Amino acid sequence: MSTLLETMEKLSTKGTCYYSLPNQVVQCTACAHNCIIKPGQKGICRMRCNRNGELRVQYGYVTAAQADPIEKKPFAHFMPGSIAMTFGMMGCNFHCDFCQNWISSQMLKDEAARVPVEAMQTISAQDLVNLAVRRDAQVMVSSYNEPIITVEWAYEIFTLAKAAGLKTAIVSNGFATAESLAYLQPVLDGFKIDLKAFTESAYKILGGRLQPVMETIQRAVDAGLWVEVVTLLVPGFNDNPAELRETAHFLASVSTDIPWHLTAYYPAYMQHSAPPTTPHQLQQAAEIGQNAGLHYVYAGNRPGRVGSLEDTFCPQCKKRVINRRGYHILEYKINANGQCAHCKTAIAGIWSDNPQDVPVTGELRSLF
Ligand code: SF4
Image (cartoon, rainbow, N blue to C red):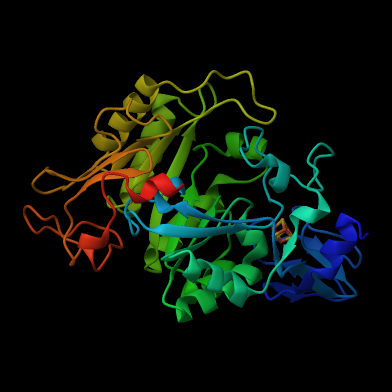
């Protein structure tokens, strides 16, 4: 039986996001590390490698593909109630010690992260799209590992998904480049970006930099993509009120219509010293976002315990337009034009053309 490395080698293809340099050296442009890679070597993510002067990238498999509620990504203003066929591969360009998907994301970087070779399921992009259609998905999402490092595979799947009438999205740490964003943008609708902290020192611990993430948020909004931002609130790491205020003001300076999700952390991977985030801490952080002028601030991972912070309100008439609990929609008051059903103000987002088909009261959610 082939080893995992042999299978990865087999399931690779020539990349698109890179430059050729002299002496068979390449420079990867998928993420902001911009690794310069010599023949026979790999980039920081360990998933993109230089073979004889050609950048080889992961291709033609998934380690997971499942139909999830779109609310799980989380997206609150992007086709609520829809099914998101979500696929992932392996690897990441960061090494967050609180990663929830560390077994696949830290593959080849951490000895303890071992993905069995059987987990790599060979599949064509068309078969994945066909699976999504059979499962009644309306959105195709690249997630679980960092999609930017496998951007060529996402591009191929998203191209076919759009031809089949699906919308597309990635769930990313936002450590992208202008090049990879421009490459993906024609086939991309939604971009969920983790803004993990708001200091360069915190990003250094995670293995990245803050500035490129801020630039990605600005570029994605400028490119007309639907952007939602998530901050996993880790007590003692990124919950300083002054830092949260700076984060919120930055987001508001890009657009007050960017939904900001503050989600509760649970101890995971190598991070067990910080206690789980309490509903009160989420509510305090959300208030900072609201005071900065953001129209849509949410608290996640504590369903039913954060008051109205799971719901969407019209920024004009202040009435509730979506009532949520966890991944369930209990009430949906947005019309086919994406407007508040009460006062007809446009609610920022990408909404269903058929609001009567949006599943409410959790009937469909029970499938998950
Ligand atoms: S995706 Fe990022 S980390 Fe991986 S090789 Fe390219 S620049 Fe380096």
